[in-house]
Image (tube, rainbow, N blue to C red; front, side, top):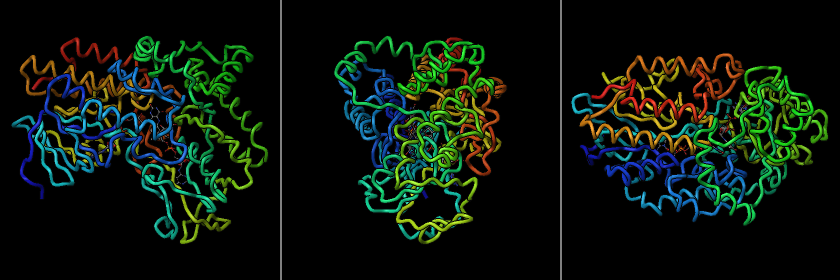
Length: 536
Ligand code: FAD
Ligand code: N01
């Protein structure tokens, strides 16, 4: 039983990653609101607090994957690598928390378990696992799109007697795999970053692959003083271009068609992407890349050819070659030395499509035709993405409706930021917004800024709240669906559409119309007096 109301504030914020930290600053320091933020972890950073696995780093260039709200912060912080490692991003977010005194209103090691909207007072009551009950006018969920690891659905997982590691909940202290026989499950973006690092340390590494993936090398490097100076001198232009871009990263407009382009031109574009670690040069080079199977096949085949060149053993190369999905329909991974790792004598690939796992045993893993002995097992098996962290909280809106029940057949939201029937709740990077289809820091700042403007508008109008209408939500959901239809995404097995989690409804969740187009829509909604919303 929770305590009586322990605190009354304007806004409760759930989460202390990029979204939660910026929300505290924006709503408290810019709008003068009282805020209380809760974070389940014992530190700030969100993704970059939890994912400490070897090799963890982002794949948006460091200077772009950072806050833009304060030019002084931009100038004082030095990113040392092109794609910074987890510890550097975590240090950056700790610096932000300290520099803006954000911890003052943040409670760590506190999980929000429930949030209930009271129709009479138009306020939320938020409960935590520390028996705190806070009353707030607004609820801002900054819980992350990739913050709820999916359950490990392999039989016998609890029977293994050695240590098991989940990449999301990696220990803070260094895990030393020296001399150990290690298994890794999962060859998504996480596995692809971790496998080369574990392969270097372990006595033997066995990679259990279910779906072969298209990896492009990151070509990460330490930034030179000249590169750093150039980033810093171009920051404003870069930010402006990122804000109106397709994916939150400035890019030239794609050419119309990969099929119409001469092969030499196409291959040169793909080769440039491969050689420089500039994935967009491959994925966004042509406008039909994710619309036409044949167009996509040109890039897919280019990557397959690279695999065949790199991997020495033809059978292993064959197993590593993706053929069952189009490039980019699963989130494209990027990491250095991935395919090369399978040339190491201490690394073996097992294709689970050919030899499925029967069970995890006390000493290892049994596939249908072999028993393996391991000292440690690593699970890089992904997330209940986009809705997992939200659905884990008992969020009750009007008439006591539970959000996860309302979303039983898939999430529906107006602009990915607001849900009809859940007044005064804002979902940062919620389903139906560009979110994971973008440089997320750009999308996070855009959402938080929009929320700040909206709350200021309500103050000017003397309104106690705001709620999306069902009609506007339906129209937006339809629009999100329409722009996805006709793309290769509809055919793919991907966490974008929930297919990685057994029983999860198959709904493509992100908005793929682009960060720039989405921003225009949100700005128009605001300029029109918050069209599609009702004031309460
Ligand atoms: P998160 O960072 O996920 O933070 C959410 C926080 O909310 C977590 O700390 C969680 O503990 C907390 N929380 C959740 N539920 C509760 C609750 N009920 N009570 C209390 N606290 C709660 N994006 C990119 O754009 N570029 C990249 O290169 C990139 N690389 C990535 C690499 C990895 C390994 C992963 C997993 C994701 C990556 N992402 C990347 C996506 C990344 O999640 C976002 O860029 C960004 O960090 C999200 O910030 P956030 O604050 O919205 O969410
Ligand atoms: O998760 P995933 P992730 N038995 O779902 C396999 C971001 N990110 O943590 O494809 C065996 O992509 C599963 O196989 P299959 C980024 O947005 C970014 O790697 O379902 N295997 C797949 O191979 C990314 O997309 C970076 O057949 C099982 C893997 O596990 C998102 O986070 C780095 C299995 C899961 O891949 C999630 O990436 C890291 C089972 N039972 C993460 N269950 C950057 O570099 C699942 N798998 C930016």
